[in-house]
Amino acid sequence: MWDQHMHCIFSGDSEALPSDMINSAITKGLDGICFTDHLDYDYKEEPGLFDLDLDGYREKISECKDKFLHSHPDFKIHWGIEIGLQPHITDKNNNVTSKYPFDLVIGSSHVVNGTDPYYPDFYKNRSEDAAYTEYFESILDNLHTNADFDVYGHIDYVVRYGPNKNKFYSYDKYSDVIDEILRSIIDKGRGIELNTAGFKYGLGHPNPTEEILKRYHSLGGEIVTVGADAHKPGHIAYDFDKVPDILKDAGFKYYTVFENRIPHFLKID
Image: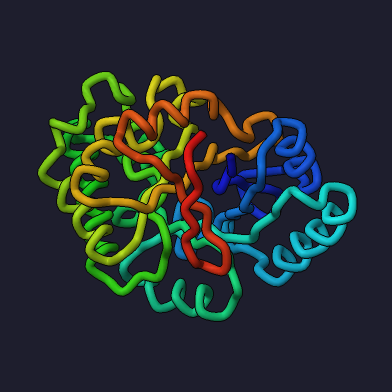
């Protein structure tokens, strides 16, 4: 299996060396990986934290590919990016994706009307339900632009950080807006990801939840990548032993690996 969502020293929130991430993935028996370091323009909480050194990042991953090709010729290393989507920076983001030859572009909602739900201020002076609803509606705002991406990342990211996390959260509670999100993604010919970091955060479920994955499939969604959202070597392929059953239970027979931004469908073992 492939892990197609991971971060290294080029992300503002990781100190991991790319070579250490690769060695961990090889040790864990993965077929391949895709680096997807963060680029989040206009990140007000910590300006510049996620301003990615794109040329340095590209050069380093290319060096790693050359190095490991000789020692592990069957192991594949892809180069991607996780872009923080916000409507007002769509053109700026699209300039990046058109300039660089990524294998995979993950589009994610990290900032909602100027605030990252990672921070407690996002939940002040309103209910958790209102905060979660605003998050999902912000995804729709991004989908109503011409944002360039291949898969939408961790669609229910917000529940990692809410006051009660996912204690009172369910697909049914937000089904109207989530269904609209899924239909829009499918209509655009894009995909979603199964992000296992939800298990790491103690949610007991991936992001998005199993019910959302099932709903996506029932609506006709076919493109689904798999990633652990690792920021350190030990978290690569986190709880991947759960992935085959989750995907099969949702109705999938294949998962997706992107190369040169073209989806390839691999049978689930």
